[in-house]
Image (cartoon, rainbow, N blue to C red; front, side, top):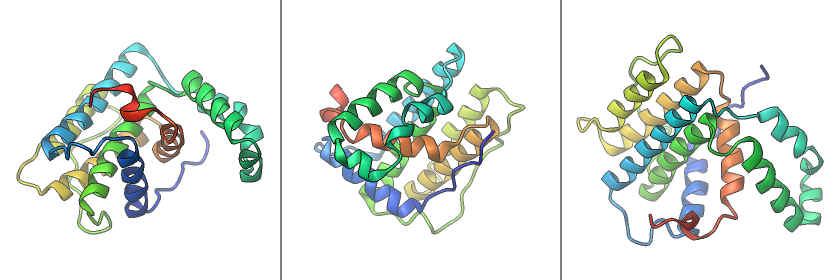
Length: 198
């Protein structure tokens, strides 16, 4: 297994994620926290379905297919071709996999943090018992318990949720922050609301 990607500055990342979500229309109706947390849980459910089906990311295949685009100058020289090849490779090797859905879970939480202007560098995280000896579903349930804990503030639930997904991903050998970055690049050029109602 390769070296795991270091956790980025969550506050900076939250603002980037939220700005892209606003561009894609996700905040036009000013969704409630309950709405947003429900969509986070939906992403976890999609991660479970991917695990049930054995849909796992082929990170090395994706990296090989995108190797010619590592240089920023190369990407800028033909942005349309780069976007086409990124979309093709992402959908072939990463999309709808367990890792991709866990990345989506974190991206939705970061979007909420960015929308509220929360400081994710402050406060501790409350995380349940997540370990690779437990079933994937059981670990996902621990995260759902954190997200729905009304004794915690929304900010605490968001930060705790991010940390819990981070722990879960590590337990299964998933380089979470690499997948978050890859999904953010993919999301930049998707259609309005990704073609969905909400």
